[in-house]
Figure 1 (cartoon, helix red, strand yellow):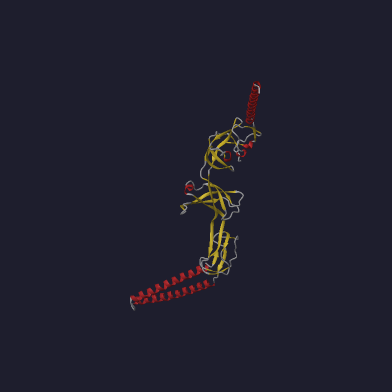
Figure 2: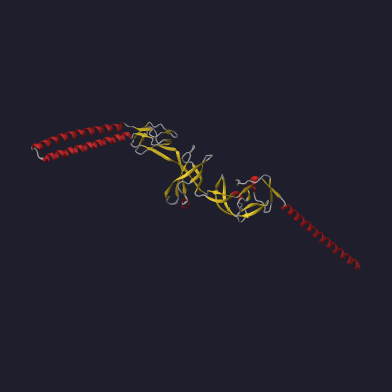
Length: 382
């Protein structure tokens, strides 16, 4: 090969390599320009928001709640028990029947007790006869002593016999009263007005003393028995209010603290707190209730809990400043229910600051926004 041809080939290769490098650099510059253009377009994306998509931080009164739960109990209830043994008769009431205080519910077969009353009365009459005899003997002996026919010792003896006869008569009278009380106890009456919750015996059954016959509940007054820890109980006071959600009930019920047990439960060290329900519309004993007990009230800058984002190392809110989104770190405080939504006290944002509601989701810092409707001026639950 000739020498000039060799150098020509080398020159062609170098030219080809140079052209390739130039094309690569040109493509890279074009790619960078495209990326920059797209980034610029991304910064200029505008998010449209409605008035309900924005909430406002405002200073309001918050009542932090203490979670409570427990079963409802009737304030007044009674167990009707047999006071004397015998055959149960006339029991007709059943679960759900209404009874009035003093109403006869059932009876115990009274034939035996009627006989005991007659027996005690006869014994009392016999004792009274002995008193009359002893009194006549004492009067005669006193007359004889006055005339000097007998000694005073005989008079003392007759006086002792009279006293003994009178004591026997009083004992017989007491026995009559006891027999009459037993006869009276054969009639079983309702001690309170209410509804029969349990029928624990059947007619014709022979019952013993203290045998349970029926249970009566007064559902006009119900209360919640809540168990609190020792720490939680320190902030509870008489008269504090609570909002309860009753199992199966559509509406909440107001309640207030009426009693606090002075003793802690052995073992768990829990303290029992009793809350009286202000209304009892169709409620029953044993229903489960849960709610929030207001233990204090404070003024704080509040935002809906849903507006606070936790997808970063520190909680933050999305604040609107000059129609752009700014991520602002906040410090969260106490929480509580207000106007049917969960609110939280925050520090780090100014009063009346407009925040992106939790339903909108996370927006990149710097995103431009515009409103399709005027923003709300009060916090909106989301």
